[in-house]
Length: 455
Ligand code: TYD
Ligand code: MG
Image (tube, rainbow, N blue to C red; front, side, top):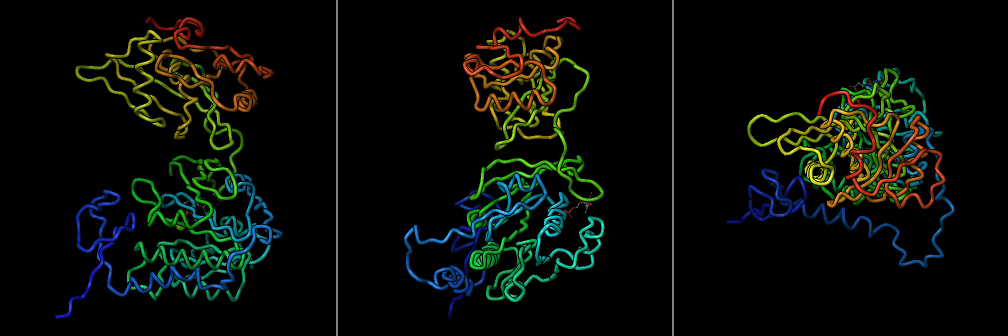
């Protein structure tokens, strides 16, 4: 009896297995391995060799490579240009990921409305009618935007080839399928195959291409990792659907800085580049609040760190961190207790970064310690003062990069003084009043305005 050979593939990472397994041996996720049918391998091999077959002329000398068309064109939406590294490069392939309802399709339409030339908008998610209604709301009802409600990647490519648009938009890569493959739309092999074909077309014709990608329930981009390797730029649309501002973050960029941050406000007329700084709201000073400047890509962002130290009931005291890493908070609590002289071992500690920003920059450490100390002692921190510095285990405050840039941003937002690590003083030509601090030990004595509650 002839055996049909089955192949099993992990939908999360694309690893292959000869039998069905509950846990993927490669990415360790459970329940993600699915069967794919036999003829798939042939199709995949064809797609893989697609690059190799096209007009192969052998290697060229670096100096013979033409760069004349590599100019960058700004789109005209300032925050989008910023995350792309200044604008669009011909043949650039962008992957735009984000939660449902965050504004991906809205951003595509607004982008299309600013292109001088024709745009082909292929949508497998919405009907032409829905897109037109949205375009009406956005003021983007333009004859240059051509809609194609289609999920067959071959049809999209044939249409694009005929039309030669100035921008190709695909919403979303997970809804596309290639009839040459057996597996269903959204499977690893389909996503990989369709993305390879589209990317190849964008590169050979020099057309910018935007692929919308779904995210998994823990926020990562859905589909194979190879998708992120294939494209030039990965943008992630983040933010709370209930908040009105949205953050567009660059996770990878072959044509500019990674970790760049763009901030938009979602209004009834679509996405509007955010004015000023949405993460810092000037409020009445209260104990437990400290401001800092973090760098997101090349952008300095002033954020407010809020701390609450409350007495713990029986049992193990809690350490709850929103917006900073939980391990880092545990470490900073220990440093604040041992070196900063505040008592935390029998208290619950909560930290929140106002505005919903996730901070990875360690320069916020000093502000966390200051906020903790302020909340634990019930004293106010110095008004209009900003705290910037990384804190080490011995309580030392370490210098951080780009102090000058950070101080300029703080100054622009009305801060009058700053607590920064000592060595930054060497190039102290900043027009903000800097207090230099070597160690968190001295924080407690220096920075209080008034004592409002008993310790
Ligand atoms: P959408 O672009 O459809 O999200 P995605 O493609 O990422 O799933 O955005 C939908 C959300 O944006 C929806 O909740 C309504 C809101 N929205 C506005 O607030 N204003 C607008 O002008 C538009 C078009 C959408
Ligand atoms: Mg959408």
